[in-house]
Length: 216
View 1: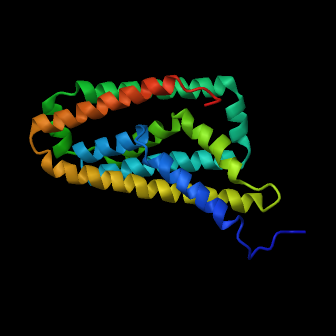
View 2: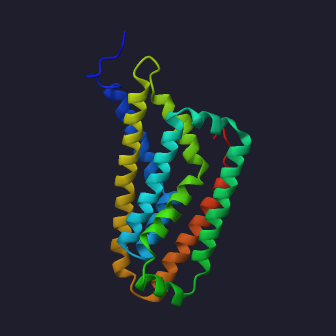
View 3: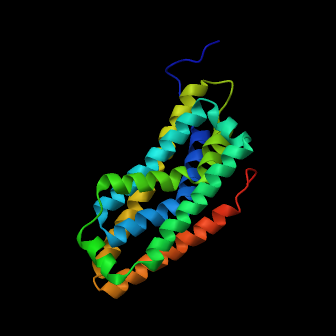
């Protein structure tokens, strides 16, 4: 018997459970949140929005990969997972060190002349695409909410759209918070402190990423 096209692809309870879990995971400050807040604090709201869109673009890509079944292959391939993980570690350490070692005058220039939206979007995409936890989420966790007896494609689409929508709201909230804090960060010393704190947290996130295993 074919599923009725007018029926919901999954139960409301399952969707709520996924939405709550996704919200909690997004609220925990990780590399994506730190990157968005760093852009908002130093460069303003527009770069923060661009950073968020880059992160969401990477999530959309991983969702598409998961929906086609390639996510399970990536998760099962030690070589691919290993390469993505260590590229992510290296990239987070690199941008973290850049922020940590930035001079006050360079931060003043960045604040006065924000980077182009495309450049920030690209960096946001790389931050999220190089995070192996994205593979774990879309390749291993998301399918746990799919009922094989139902319309699998519709369920995956609903879960993917929910994931993107939730993360958009959370990143926008963090970006808005960074924008408000930026109003108080008018002195170069305060901007430098914010940037170095973000740099240190990104380095810590990179080191934490190094400990991630496929079974985590």
